[in-house]
Length: 431
Image (cartoon, rainbow, N blue to C red):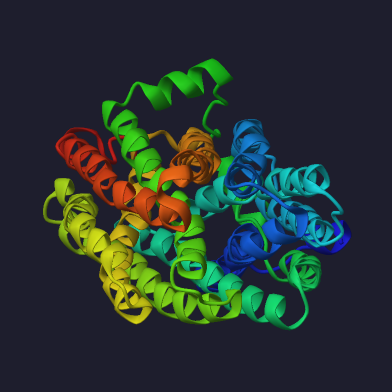
């Protein structure tokens, strides 16, 4: 495969690169999020507490995912690194580890397999963001990154739909095995079809004509990234949004099963389908709004995420109060769409706030915080809180946890607004 990837080829069109990266990111989230719809059957089979569910769905994946993301991003930022090959290797690892989750016989084995999924996925997004920033014009960067980010709602949708149907028909072990296998084949497709624009005749000629930018040391790169006040505010906003997003994603699926009595297949179909559609709409809309209004005033790149999360909070609260699951599902669609507005604008800002030589590291730094705090602690915190109030609330403990989570959406709204005030001074000053 390495020989195929190294063979000289014409440069791949940006459209082809974006579509294949979208498919990769979709597989990323199918393998990452399928555990949410499988959590309740796994818990019954392995006799897990809500805290253990939180560990399995959150920190087990996030710990090495976040830690390894930084050195892998530094490797990705090197001019000699083939980012396509890096993504293909990462895809192979996380797909294989997803399949191994289905072979786990106890909680520890399942936890270790989830750690392996996180190790593989650490190599994907920083390299993909850096690649997209290189091939897409600055004025269309938010839309391009939002297009890539469609992998989140599409992968979550497919993970819930496929996972729910497989667990109802075959079991949770078979579900892991079936969704893990196709990723290895997709890795081969990447190596055959795509090429990194840094590797090839045009880039070599360009570097021969002008000297390449100096390579930054780790200390210089981190200093360049964290010297931006806007970037620091963006980290806080993105981490708070991620904490709520991952925490609610895990426990809302369990809420529909425990409180409303739906099966995993029913939750996967209805919540996956409509929640996925709302997430897709919000992700695309967020990128379009950022590019459309950000051209007129750079502050407006983050206006939609700030306003959207402010409006989403009371709507989400009303959904968890509803006694009929159909009403609850319908009420969740608008806040789901509004909470998805932030991804494209956020990562577009990351690419515009730092020097090109540190773009992958900047994405990894934000992902480090988002995933350690959001994915790592969100499901775990909600699970621990559910266990703590269960003696008083009974099976409604998850509902009460989600009541509180609705109000917390005001925190990322505030920090997105504060960050937007600094964008005129800081955004795209390095390009």
